[in-house]
Length: 398
Ligand SMILES: Cc1ncc(COP(=O)(O)O)c(C=O)c1O
Image (cartoon, rainbow, N blue to C red):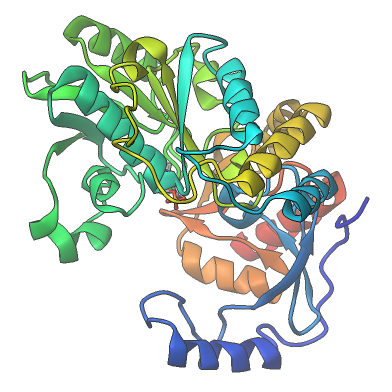
């Protein structure tokens, strides 16, 4: 299998080429974007399966799936082939005006995977945009502006999504520009209802807060809470979706269907595309277009993104990646005290950022998630690669 090798380091990490590029990058990119230190970052050159190679020729095992995106493996051959074929045919269409057939095919597949029928899709280009679409849909449907979200929540950084994101680190510089239509309640507890609320937005398993699984009753109780008060229940499955947690979508663990589902990341395996899928009864509150959509964007339903998503979804089915994620998750949890589900796991550690820097020196790519070390590899990671990575983590954590 391509990309199933163990780490091979030819230089110190980061190597001289990565170091030189990082210094140059700081001259041209805003200094807020890429963190550069003596130990960070490496510049990626290519990737396959769960392997990444940097510009210095070092080979790594990836425990991040590059932010939980490459679920069927980096540069999955079927996804690459679909992208190649589509790129030769049509690079860009007119999303909400003269569309491309792939947009229809993907919308149909997403409806079947989620609500099965009687649902509609709006496409976007990033996870944050999928959240914006859900927030707008709920506002149009209920005419109530207030939104309930939760402590620790991460929903993206565009202004609407940022209002729902909890951490002050992201919010503080922009506090005065936020809409302040979102109230945050403790994750895991049922909020107090007030008349102004129209929607509840929640990650079924919190990702960037540190991979936090809520108490067993939380999502079923939230569903009842929304039904009782006529609120739209929005699940942000941008991180948890597409087999990551051992099910196609995390809500399947609790057997609770929301009204709107936000999708991104693992949808395509590596092309920027996102979607909000919703029950027709809620989605059809949007008025029919009479020539100008109320919400759209230039690249909506991009043909390359749709081609990648169709191929990636087919690969996740063919390789039965939900079951594989579940099985590997059980295996990891038996070896270390992780929290999470499937291959969305967090290992609580003392200094997650420092540990990630150390792991990089050992050829393992990992990221902190809150106070935990994130274990979110491509779902195709081999047993050998995983065992190797776990052995190194155990040695470093002690
Ligand atoms: C749960 C969740 N929602 C939304 C987002 C935002 O997605 P994007 O970075 O594609 O805008 C993320 C990104 O990490 C996420 O984890």
